[in-house]
Length: 351
Ligand code: 13P
Ligand code: SF4
Image (cartoon, rainbow, N blue to C red; front, side, top):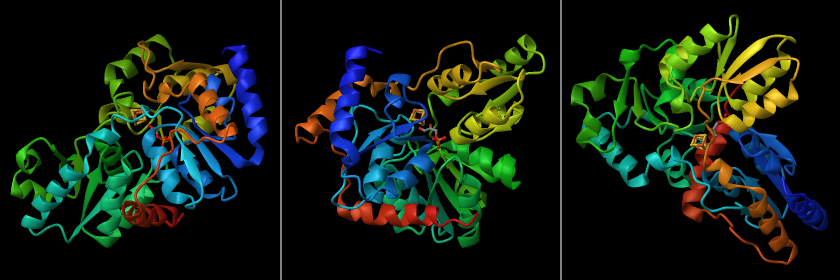
């Protein structure tokens, strides 16, 4: 990265001292991650944000829904900053509040809303988390989806899982013993989600038709191809990947799990990793004694994560030094209150 910008970022951070805390998601660029006080997956970063009551400014190098969650979990006097407001998440955008309310109406009309517990992946807007909090549900991340679903199925007999169909299906089927037939796919663009009343009544897991455009790119062919090219390779993927990819993989888990698994792997072992490319490249650099490769032949960055680059970070930090707060992310108090209920429920999950 540009040495001048590196020096400017370092100087601005030094000038702000303990007033600023920089959080960096594992999918961020190297040029940005070097300035993170803490790196993590979305669960760890939510906890880290909540654990920094003394930082006046939380600069969130990640995407919009993560900054919203940080705003909800921090005190009113703390300000959360997203260095580029265009850093959204296509998966989070696939569940809009009006659509989810309409789906809930469908369930209510069938008389099954009362027994349904809404569970939303962290990768959703604050509005959706607020909806889930209002209806007795919980937020989950890829590191605690099973615990969240265990909790939800202790509250009701049916789950509406938002917005990532893959995390919901993979967790229910591969970790909890539900069958594929227990899951139905709710398409918000079709009347009644494209499902019959009987399907909605029978389903255990109503999966929202959302997905991650980055992890959704890996296919069964990617797995078969790497196994052919690299005999003995271990395939390690994120649970946002399609069901057939996760089923064919050797290991599955959140970004934090992926990092720990690679760290613990013996020298000389070979790993094909199905997650965002910035993280895979960093893992390969950090472990030259292991053979670490990207699961697919095509490059696969998260384009919105990548919007946070060093120029944007420098700008946000220098503005703070000048006493100006730019790109602050705020959630309205009513939404924040209900979203916090669902987030606190997640943070209180046992285990
Ligand atoms: P985790 O950070 O929970 O592993 O999620 C991955 C992701 O896609 C974040 O946007
Ligand atoms: Fe969203 Fe996927 Fe990017 Fe994560 S990797 S921010 S889920 S698009």
